[in-house]
Image (cartoon, rainbow, N blue to C red; front, side):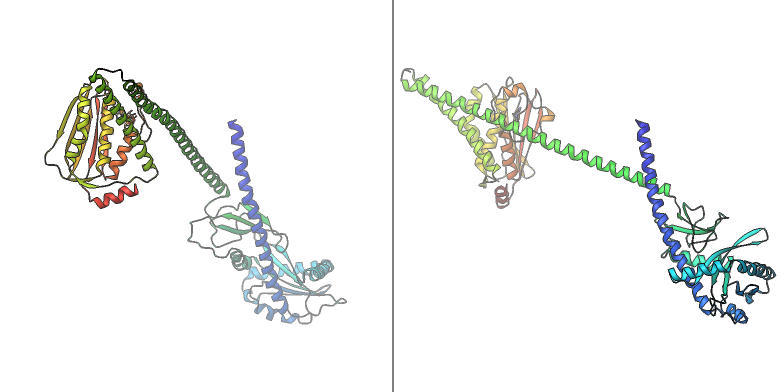
Amino acid sequence: MAGAWHLRNIQRDKAIEAVFQREYQQVLAIAEKQIDTRAYDIAEEARAKFPDVNHGDELEAFLASHRDIAHAFLWTGKGHVESQPQPDRMSDPEFVDEGRKFLSMIGPWFDLESKDFITKLKKSEAMEGRHVYLTSNWITKGDKLLYQSLVLFMPRGSTAEHPALAGFVYDTDYLKDKFFPQALNEVLPNQNRNDTSHPQPVIMVRTAKDHDPLATSLCWDGGSPEVERSFDGVFPGLILGIKLRGTTIANISNHFVRTAFLILGALSLLMGAGMLLTYRNVARELALAKLKSDFVSNVSHEMRTPLSLIRLYAETLELGRLSNPEKRQEYYEIIRKESERLTALINNILDFSRIESGKKEYNFRETDVADLVRSTLESYRFEIEQNGFQFEQKIDNDLPQVSVDREAIARSLLNLVNNAVKYSATDKYLGINLYRHNGGVNLEVVDHGIGIPAKEQPKIFEKFYRVGDPLVHNTKGSGLGLSLVRHIVHAHGGEVAVESEPGQGSKFIITLPVQAAEVQQAKGMSA
Ligand code: ADP
């Protein structure tokens, strides 16, 4: 398995390299064409100035105005050849010697091959409109073979009856120092020797017999070319080569593969994160759907109990069989309490639906919170104590006036008190503390009940949420109380927090700031 994977990788690396190679072959093909055209243009220009068949004596003058040409010659028939070396270089004995050798070779060569050359020239003239034929010429200098470029054409005055051939030679120095450097840099314009920010292609030309470059483009940095192409037209025996400065195709393709892997990795991560998010959203929706269905069954249950009690006691009273006035009184009281419980529940639900639809409005007024807390608890106090609760109320004297919606704060307090009573099975204690805090007031509701595990504490303020504990499950509830408390307190610019430990009890703290009523009003409206 790993082997197959590795093999696939190698194949892919090779494929990237092949793309580069193809690309470079194309660059070289274009380069060859450009260089050929340049060579033809230069040669055609010189040919136009070349003496006609009857003016072999003007060869010297011709060479004087064409310093790049090493030797020129004119062949006007079997055994008739004139040749002239570049007069500029006559002081160099080696050069003179080379010229002599060249002449001794050219005469017999043309005597033999003139027909062939003339046919070639005519063909190229007819097909490509070119009047010159370029080919290579190798000469030996010491123990070295040197490359020269030979240009052949029919001079002016050459006729079908008296065909003539003429030509000249560009020697290695000219090709090496002038022609190719210029031609190669023309192929790669805009080279910048100092710009190493990205790999630039560089090219060179060499002879087929030597691996060292004959000439290179400006930024060539040594080494061997990665892709080569033989000149097959104008400069037979020369080879063009291309590579990247400062790097290799293999490096680039490795880099490419690495980058591709990185991108793939990043994409996989993104996809993973997307899937996780989707999963979380779906899970949350599912949990909410379950909470809602629990809510419906909880609420129905909570409504049914007081309703059946009310009906039961009302029916008993209706029958008029109860002679004991105390019993009757007790029944009335039960009916009142149960209907109060029902009203509280319905108020919670109505408040909740107003909040959810954004229609909840608050009516803020400067209020003595101590008075509000006392009067809210007054009617409950007796009942709470009768249920066996130890009730403790600590209210400071010098409390500031706070701007609140009385009804909403009273409802929040009752929700907290109700919870404290509901969730205290054995140690029945209810403490209410009201004291000054940061210019505003803090209202605390303390119980010694079942408590709330730390990890559940942040969730209990969410709508419909009920802790999944059997102790909670056996207690009636809608999961709305605390979410209402939080909403109301936030609308007052305050905070609600919980401190609790399972089995030890809980403390809910409402912090109310003293705040301008207008600001709160605006907040309440937009909440
Ligand atoms: P519920 O109608 O279920 O009481 P609440 O929103 O008032 O809904 O409370 C959410 C949950 O927080 C409750 O179901 C309960 O698990 C937990 N809780 C609230 N108050 C207390 C408390 N005083 N002691 C222990 N748990 C509490």
